[in-house]
Length: 180
Image (cartoon, rainbow, N blue to C red; front, top):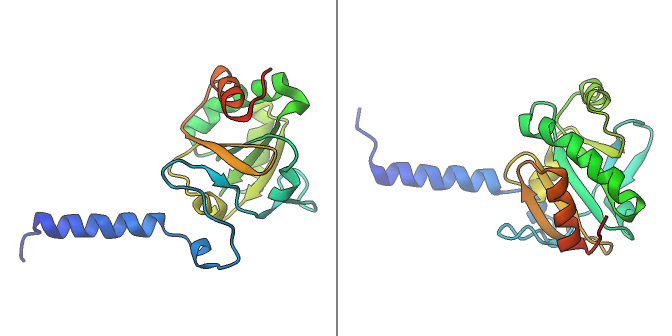
């Protein structure tokens, strides 16, 4: 067997990374412009989700326009997500109706996600993305990922990693112009 050369390893790595970052949404001519992969800014791609607490209700990203919105991707299998959820809830309570908070549960069975929300005391809006496709569509790179979306539906900032209450409030003030 022939040993693997550094060039062959580099080519394999580039192909693997390309596969990880591609999405079917980029092939859709009717899809809105994708978020910038480098900055995480741009129009929030439209999508429709099922309300996590009431699966008979459909929720569209267009429903969020008109109010600055913090969109947080989370999952029960994400340790950092578990750590930040109480801080997001605290920021949501502090900001009240001035900023909408929406959680997008990624790839959890509904009963596990609901039990998790009960355990953490999270009460802000929650939708389900069982296949995780929307996470890929917005160009997320790690969990948790949080989007700061202005009232016009434009993502002003994308943050990867856990946030504290103070950081959320600071980012909302900086990118959405809302203070608590």
